[in-house]
Image (tube, rainbow, N blue to C red; front, side):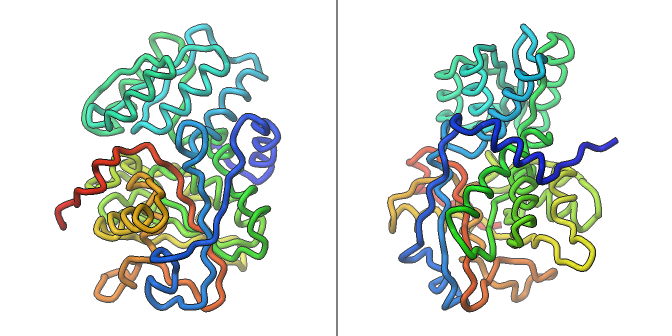
Length: 342
Protein backbone atom coordinates (compact mmCIF):
# COMPACT_ATOMS: atom_id res chain seq x y z
CA UNK A 1 0.00 0.00 0.00
CA UNK A 2 1.39 3.38 -0.98
CA UNK A 3 2.01 5.81 1.86
CA UNK A 4 -0.21 8.87 1.81
CA UNK A 5 0.21 12.47 2.91
CA UNK A 6 -2.62 14.52 4.35
CA UNK A 7 -3.09 17.91 5.94
CA UNK A 8 -3.32 16.28 9.38
CA UNK A 9 0.24 15.01 8.88
CA UNK A 10 1.44 18.57 8.29
CA UNK A 11 -0.36 19.88 11.38
CA UNK A 12 1.21 17.09 13.45
CA UNK A 13 4.63 17.93 12.02
CA UNK A 14 4.18 21.60 12.88
CA UNK A 15 3.50 20.71 16.50
CA UNK A 16 6.39 18.24 16.61
CA UNK A 17 9.07 20.59 15.28
CA UNK A 18 7.83 23.83 16.86
CA UNK A 19 10.76 25.54 18.56
CA UNK A 20 13.27 23.30 16.75
CA UNK A 21 13.35 25.13 13.39
CA UNK A 22 13.52 28.79 12.45
CA UNK A 23 10.19 30.35 11.45
CA UNK A 24 10.33 31.54 7.85
CA UNK A 25 10.84 35.23 7.15
CA UNK A 26 8.95 36.79 4.25
CA UNK A 27 9.67 40.02 2.39
CA UNK A 28 7.91 41.99 -0.35
CA UNK A 29 9.91 41.90 -3.57
CA UNK A 30 11.30 45.05 -5.08
CA UNK A 31 13.56 45.69 -8.03
CA UNK A 32 14.35 43.39 -10.98
CA UNK A 33 12.80 40.29 -9.44
CA UNK A 34 9.33 41.88 -9.25
CA UNK A 35 6.76 40.18 -11.45
CA UNK A 36 6.04 43.45 -13.29
CA UNK A 37 9.60 43.40 -14.62
CA UNK A 38 9.29 39.79 -15.71
CA UNK A 39 6.70 40.00 -18.46
CA UNK A 40 2.97 40.51 -18.53
CA UNK A 41 2.15 40.53 -14.80
CA UNK A 42 2.23 44.24 -14.12
CA UNK A 43 -0.08 44.52 -11.08
CA UNK A 44 0.90 41.30 -9.37
CA UNK A 45 2.07 41.51 -5.76
CA UNK A 46 5.20 39.47 -5.21
CA UNK A 47 6.62 38.14 -1.92
CA UNK A 48 9.77 36.16 -1.20
CA UNK A 49 9.87 33.42 1.44
CA UNK A 50 13.43 33.49 2.79
CA UNK A 51 13.68 29.84 3.78
CA UNK A 52 17.38 29.79 2.89
CA UNK A 53 17.85 31.33 6.37
CA UNK A 54 16.75 28.02 7.88
CA UNK A 55 19.10 25.81 9.95
CA UNK A 56 21.63 24.10 7.62
CA UNK A 57 20.77 26.62 4.89
CA UNK A 58 17.67 24.95 3.44
CA UNK A 59 14.09 23.86 4.08
CA UNK A 60 15.32 20.28 4.52
CA UNK A 61 15.84 20.89 8.24
CA UNK A 62 12.06 20.75 8.69
CA UNK A 63 11.62 17.26 7.29
CA UNK A 64 14.74 15.93 9.01
CA UNK A 65 13.56 17.16 12.39
CA UNK A 66 10.09 15.73 11.87
CA UNK A 67 11.47 12.37 10.72
CA UNK A 68 13.90 11.86 13.58
CA UNK A 69 11.69 13.31 16.31
CA UNK A 70 8.81 11.05 15.19
CA UNK A 71 11.09 8.00 15.39
CA UNK A 72 12.40 9.14 18.76
CA UNK A 73 8.83 9.40 20.04
CA UNK A 74 8.08 5.92 18.70
CA UNK A 75 11.26 4.42 20.18
CA UNK A 76 12.50 3.34 16.75
CA UNK A 77 15.86 5.13 16.53
CA UNK A 78 18.45 2.30 16.33
CA UNK A 79 21.93 2.30 17.87
CA UNK A 80 23.36 2.24 14.33
CA UNK A 81 21.93 5.72 13.80
CA UNK A 82 20.45 7.11 10.61
CA UNK A 83 21.58 7.05 7.00
CA UNK A 84 20.54 9.02 3.95
CA UNK A 85 21.47 9.61 0.32
CA UNK A 86 21.44 13.20 -0.80
CA UNK A 87 22.60 15.78 -3.29
CA UNK A 88 23.81 17.64 -0.21
CA UNK A 89 21.03 19.62 1.47
CA UNK A 90 19.00 16.69 2.79
CA UNK A 91 22.19 15.07 4.04
CA UNK A 92 23.17 18.21 5.92
CA UNK A 93 19.73 18.50 7.46
CA UNK A 94 19.76 14.82 8.48
CA UNK A 95 23.24 15.13 9.99
CA UNK A 96 22.26 18.29 11.85
CA UNK A 97 19.05 16.74 13.21
CA UNK A 98 20.93 13.55 14.15
CA UNK A 99 23.47 15.62 16.06
CA UNK A 100 20.60 17.27 17.93
CA UNK A 101 19.21 13.81 18.75
CA UNK A 102 22.58 12.39 19.75
CA UNK A 103 22.67 9.70 17.03
CA UNK A 104 25.13 8.91 14.25
CA UNK A 105 24.54 9.92 10.66
CA UNK A 106 26.04 8.25 7.58
CA UNK A 107 25.46 10.29 4.44
CA UNK A 108 25.91 9.10 0.85
CA UNK A 109 26.48 11.75 -1.83
CA UNK A 110 27.37 11.69 -5.53
CA UNK A 111 31.05 12.42 -6.05
CA UNK A 112 29.95 15.53 -7.96
CA UNK A 113 28.42 17.14 -4.85
CA UNK A 114 29.70 20.70 -4.21
CA UNK A 115 32.63 20.89 -1.81
CA UNK A 116 30.79 23.49 0.27
CA UNK A 117 28.12 20.89 1.06
CA UNK A 118 30.63 18.13 1.82
CA UNK A 119 32.49 20.42 4.22
CA UNK A 120 29.29 21.42 6.00
CA UNK A 121 28.28 17.79 6.37
CA UNK A 122 31.55 16.90 8.01
CA UNK A 123 31.20 19.87 10.34
CA UNK A 124 28.02 18.23 11.66
CA UNK A 125 29.97 15.06 12.44
CA UNK A 126 28.56 12.97 9.60
CA UNK A 127 30.33 10.00 8.06
CA UNK A 128 30.38 11.19 4.42
CA UNK A 129 30.61 8.61 1.63
CA UNK A 130 30.91 9.69 -2.01
CA UNK A 131 29.44 7.24 -4.52
CA UNK A 132 28.82 7.53 -8.27
CA UNK A 133 27.95 10.64 -10.22
CA UNK A 134 24.15 10.87 -9.68
CA UNK A 135 21.79 10.82 -6.73
CA UNK A 136 20.35 7.45 -7.79
CA UNK A 137 23.75 5.77 -7.38
CA UNK A 138 24.24 7.27 -3.93
CA UNK A 139 20.73 6.09 -3.00
CA UNK A 140 21.49 2.48 -4.01
CA UNK A 141 24.63 2.50 -1.86
CA UNK A 142 22.69 3.99 1.05
CA UNK A 143 20.01 1.31 0.84
CA UNK A 144 22.65 -1.41 0.85
CA UNK A 145 24.32 0.16 3.90
CA UNK A 146 21.02 0.41 5.77
CA UNK A 147 20.26 -3.26 5.10
CA UNK A 148 23.68 -4.42 6.31
CA UNK A 149 24.16 -2.09 9.28
CA UNK A 150 20.68 -1.75 10.74
CA UNK A 151 20.79 2.04 10.42
CA UNK A 152 17.46 3.81 10.04
CA UNK A 153 17.04 4.75 6.38
CA UNK A 154 15.83 8.29 5.86
CA UNK A 155 15.14 9.77 2.44
CA UNK A 156 15.85 13.09 0.78
CA UNK A 157 12.21 13.54 -0.24
CA UNK A 158 10.24 10.29 -0.70
CA UNK A 159 8.71 9.81 2.74
CA UNK A 160 5.51 11.21 4.32
CA UNK A 161 7.33 12.42 7.45
CA UNK A 162 9.88 14.28 5.32
CA UNK A 163 7.21 15.83 3.09
CA UNK A 164 4.99 16.71 6.06
CA UNK A 165 7.88 18.51 7.72
CA UNK A 166 8.49 20.47 4.51
CA UNK A 167 4.80 21.34 4.37
CA UNK A 168 5.06 23.26 7.64
CA UNK A 169 6.72 25.99 5.58
CA UNK A 170 3.41 26.61 3.79
CA UNK A 171 1.60 26.91 7.11
CA UNK A 172 3.96 29.69 8.12
CA UNK A 173 3.77 31.47 4.76
CA UNK A 174 -0.03 31.36 4.91
CA UNK A 175 0.04 32.98 8.35
CA UNK A 176 2.47 35.71 7.26
CA UNK A 177 0.99 36.65 3.85
CA UNK A 178 -2.79 37.06 4.21
CA UNK A 179 -4.76 36.70 1.00
CA UNK A 180 -2.04 34.77 -0.80
CA UNK A 181 -3.19 33.37 -4.15
CA UNK A 182 -0.20 31.40 -5.42
CA UNK A 183 3.05 29.87 -4.18
CA UNK A 184 5.95 28.99 -6.51
CA UNK A 185 8.16 26.09 -5.44
CA UNK A 186 11.24 24.59 -7.06
CA UNK A 187 10.99 20.82 -7.52
CA UNK A 188 13.63 18.11 -7.55
CA UNK A 189 12.27 14.87 -6.11
CA UNK A 190 9.12 16.62 -4.97
CA UNK A 191 9.12 16.34 -1.18
CA UNK A 192 8.88 20.09 -0.63
CA UNK A 193 6.25 20.41 -3.32
CA UNK A 194 4.19 17.53 -1.88
CA UNK A 195 4.08 19.14 1.55
CA UNK A 196 3.55 22.69 0.32
CA UNK A 197 0.87 21.70 -2.21
CA UNK A 198 -1.01 19.65 0.40
CA UNK A 199 -1.08 22.57 2.83
CA UNK A 200 -1.75 25.11 0.07
CA UNK A 201 -4.82 23.22 -1.09
CA UNK A 202 -6.20 23.30 2.45
CA UNK A 203 -5.99 27.10 2.37
CA UNK A 204 -7.23 27.59 -1.19
CA UNK A 205 -3.80 28.60 -2.48
CA UNK A 206 -2.51 27.44 -5.85
CA UNK A 207 0.85 25.65 -5.86
CA UNK A 208 3.09 25.99 -8.92
CA UNK A 209 5.83 23.39 -9.34
CA UNK A 210 8.87 24.81 -11.16
CA UNK A 211 11.52 22.53 -12.67
CA UNK A 212 14.52 22.96 -14.97
CA UNK A 213 13.55 21.92 -18.49
CA UNK A 214 16.26 19.25 -18.49
CA UNK A 215 15.50 17.91 -15.01
CA UNK A 216 11.74 17.41 -15.02
CA UNK A 217 10.93 14.40 -12.85
CA UNK A 218 7.56 15.70 -11.63
CA UNK A 219 6.53 17.15 -14.98
CA UNK A 220 7.21 13.81 -16.64
CA UNK A 221 5.39 11.93 -13.89
CA UNK A 222 2.28 14.07 -14.29
CA UNK A 223 2.34 13.50 -18.05
CA UNK A 224 2.66 9.74 -17.55
CA UNK A 225 0.25 9.53 -14.63
CA UNK A 226 2.91 7.91 -12.44
CA UNK A 227 6.55 8.44 -11.42
CA UNK A 228 8.96 7.69 -14.28
CA UNK A 229 12.72 8.02 -14.72
CA UNK A 230 14.12 11.09 -16.47
CA UNK A 231 17.56 12.25 -17.47
CA UNK A 232 19.20 15.04 -15.45
CA UNK A 233 21.18 17.77 -17.19
CA UNK A 234 20.81 21.14 -15.50
CA UNK A 235 22.83 23.81 -13.75
CA UNK A 236 20.53 23.11 -10.78
CA UNK A 237 21.16 19.37 -10.89
CA UNK A 238 23.09 19.23 -7.61
CA UNK A 239 19.91 19.98 -5.65
CA UNK A 240 17.08 19.34 -8.16
CA UNK A 241 18.63 16.35 -9.90
CA UNK A 242 16.30 13.53 -8.88
CA UNK A 243 15.70 11.06 -11.69
CA UNK A 244 12.26 10.12 -10.32
CA UNK A 245 9.68 12.16 -8.41
CA UNK A 246 7.93 10.88 -5.32
CA UNK A 247 4.39 9.60 -5.77
CA UNK A 248 3.46 11.93 -2.90
CA UNK A 249 4.10 14.89 -5.20
CA UNK A 250 2.12 13.36 -8.06
CA UNK A 251 -0.82 12.81 -5.71
CA UNK A 252 -0.56 16.35 -4.33
CA UNK A 253 -0.67 17.82 -7.84
CA UNK A 254 -3.83 16.02 -8.94
CA UNK A 255 -7.06 18.03 -8.93
CA UNK A 256 -9.79 17.20 -6.47
CA UNK A 257 -13.30 16.58 -7.76
CA UNK A 258 -14.61 19.83 -9.16
CA UNK A 259 -11.38 21.68 -8.41
CA UNK A 260 -8.11 22.55 -10.05
CA UNK A 261 -4.81 20.86 -9.40
CA UNK A 262 -1.38 22.34 -9.03
CA UNK A 263 0.43 23.70 -12.06
CA UNK A 264 3.71 22.25 -13.35
CA UNK A 265 5.99 24.54 -15.37
CA UNK A 266 9.51 24.35 -16.78
CA UNK A 267 12.31 26.90 -17.00
CA UNK A 268 15.56 26.93 -18.99
CA UNK A 269 18.94 27.06 -17.27
CA UNK A 270 19.49 30.55 -18.63
CA UNK A 271 16.49 31.86 -16.65
CA UNK A 272 17.74 30.10 -13.51
CA UNK A 273 21.15 31.74 -13.81
CA UNK A 274 19.53 35.11 -14.45
CA UNK A 275 17.22 34.81 -11.43
CA UNK A 276 20.12 33.87 -9.18
CA UNK A 277 22.22 36.79 -10.37
CA UNK A 278 19.38 39.28 -10.00
CA UNK A 279 18.73 38.15 -6.43
CA UNK A 280 22.39 38.81 -5.67
CA UNK A 281 22.80 42.05 -7.57
CA UNK A 282 19.58 43.66 -6.37
CA UNK A 283 19.18 42.30 -2.81
CA UNK A 284 22.49 40.62 -1.96
CA UNK A 285 20.62 37.33 -1.58
CA UNK A 286 22.88 34.43 -2.48
CA UNK A 287 21.01 31.18 -3.16
CA UNK A 288 21.62 27.92 -4.96
CA UNK A 289 20.61 27.52 -8.58
CA UNK A 290 17.93 25.15 -7.29
CA UNK A 291 16.46 27.84 -5.04
CA UNK A 292 16.55 30.42 -7.84
CA UNK A 293 14.56 28.04 -10.05
CA UNK A 294 11.26 29.07 -8.48
CA UNK A 295 11.89 32.75 -9.22
CA UNK A 296 13.06 31.84 -12.73
CA UNK A 297 9.45 30.95 -13.57
CA UNK A 298 8.68 34.69 -13.54
CA UNK A 299 11.63 35.43 -15.80
CA UNK A 300 11.34 32.61 -18.33
CA UNK A 301 9.68 32.95 -21.70
CA UNK A 302 5.91 32.55 -21.68
CA UNK A 303 5.86 29.34 -23.67
CA UNK A 304 5.79 30.78 -27.18
CA UNK A 305 7.31 28.21 -29.48
CA UNK A 306 7.38 25.55 -26.75
CA UNK A 307 5.69 22.32 -27.77
CA UNK A 308 3.68 21.86 -24.57
CA UNK A 309 3.32 25.54 -23.62
CA UNK A 310 4.65 25.06 -20.12
CA UNK A 311 7.52 27.54 -19.83
CA UNK A 312 7.33 29.99 -16.99
CA UNK A 313 4.44 31.43 -15.01
CA UNK A 314 2.62 34.72 -15.60
CA UNK A 315 0.56 35.94 -12.63
CA UNK A 316 -2.69 37.72 -13.30
CA UNK A 317 -3.21 41.39 -12.55
CA UNK A 318 -3.65 41.75 -8.80
CA UNK A 319 -2.52 38.20 -8.04
CA UNK A 320 -0.59 37.83 -4.78
CA UNK A 321 2.34 35.46 -5.33
CA UNK A 322 4.99 34.07 -2.98
CA UNK A 323 8.24 32.60 -4.31
CA UNK A 324 10.02 30.15 -2.03
CA UNK A 325 13.80 30.67 -1.89
CA UNK A 326 14.57 27.32 -0.36
CA UNK A 327 18.35 26.93 -0.07
CA UNK A 328 21.65 28.79 0.04
CA UNK A 329 24.35 26.12 0.22
CA UNK A 330 26.36 27.33 -2.74
CA UNK A 331 29.76 28.59 -3.78
CA UNK A 332 29.70 32.36 -4.37
CA UNK A 333 32.34 31.93 -7.08
CA UNK A 334 29.74 30.31 -9.33
CA UNK A 335 27.92 33.63 -9.67
CA UNK A 336 30.46 34.53 -12.33
CA UNK A 337 29.96 31.41 -14.41
CA UNK A 338 27.14 30.56 -16.81
CA UNK A 339 26.04 27.20 -18.18
CA UNK A 340 26.42 26.42 -21.84
CA UNK A 341 23.06 26.74 -23.64
CA UNK A 342 21.33 23.45 -24.50
